[in-house]
Amino acid sequence: DQQVKQNSPSLSVQEGRISILNCDYTNSMFDYFLWYKKYPAEGPTFLISISSIKDKNEDGRFTVFLNKSAKHLSLHIVPSQPGDSAVYFCAASPLNSNSGYALNFGKGTSLLVTP
Amino acid sequence: KAGVTQTPRYLIKTRGQQVTLSCSPISGHRSVSWYQQTPGQGLQFLFEYFSETQRNKGNFPGRFSGRQFSNSRSEMNVSTLELGDSALYLCASSGGGGSSYEQYFGPGTRLTVT
Image (cartoon, rainbow over all chains, first blue to last red; front, side):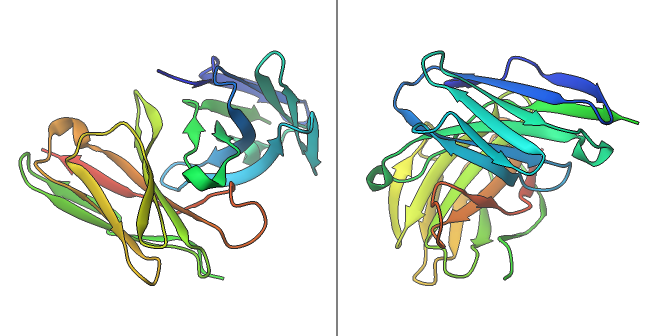
């Protein structure tokens, strides 16, 4: 069963505007959340992460918001640029390194930023 | 610092054959994970190795196996290939400092089974 869900397969945004990508999860054991960006023919690239003790983490144009009670997180990209066009994956992991690292991924949202 | 490397990048095999894929992690990283990416299922966790031991395993049949060497390099093997095994196989490493939950991915091996 899919424990991390990205319900929007695609999103189109104009350059300069805000892109908001959403992600929902079902497993209450997840304590660490990550966003990855993927271009065709390349592996996913780590973008930004957040642990459950925070509700916001910012890195330049990228901000991730976490609403733990709603089991929902979102990635905001401001301002959006054409180079941001890629597939974005949300991933989650329980915060227990003793059991190893196993990221649970959503199916991705394809973002297109148009000039 | 060199990134995660995977070989080969592309592979075509026939149903019933077996295949071995290789992954070299980022220097200093001790954890290596493998993922399968298909259009319908997205990225799915196969297994994770740390210090030559499999520490975690996803829901894949026993035809999928792996190992890690003392230098942290890892291989995964798929025996008795099926058409549904056609996918992009991604290797990721972590454990080089900072948050170990941040995994760094290689470019992947594109496996096509005919």
